[in-house]
Amino acid sequence: MNENPAAAPAPLHYKIVIDAADPHAQADFWAAALHYTAEDHSRLIEGLLGAGAVPEEATVEIRGRRAWRDLAAVRHPDDPWQEGTGTGLGRRLLFQRVPEPKSGKNRLHLDLHSEPGRREEEIARLESLGASVLRRVAEQGGEWAHMLDPEGNDFCLH
Image (cartoon, rainbow, N blue to C red; front, side):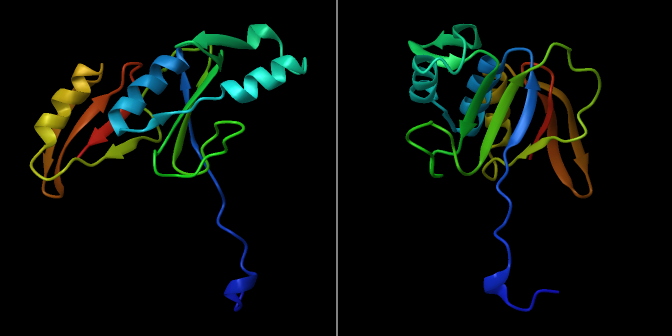
């Protein structure tokens, strides 16, 4: 056991990566669902394209800006981010394109927590964004809605 807290290693930095058929549509949904900010990587991409470090085919134009074809990310609006790359340095979701469809229940899912007394309003808002309710749960330990995002990924709204 390390007795000196000053010598302890820094906590690991992480992001949650979610496989997607359409990473940009998923990023748009989750940015709206969580009130997050979609990351803008256009400065990084333009620099890499200009240097010949990435092929044009690795990019697409989204809302008038260069974006990665197979990746999109969202970040908490209050967390730090790198100006030169647009990459978030805190709470972050990254969506990566994969060829295979989702097959089965997620082994990991997000739990969203609404304001007290506003769950039904939040369910309606998420449904308007493309989510659906799989089932409503009322157990001794609490109540929540088991929901699916537009690509069928499980999440819960408490």
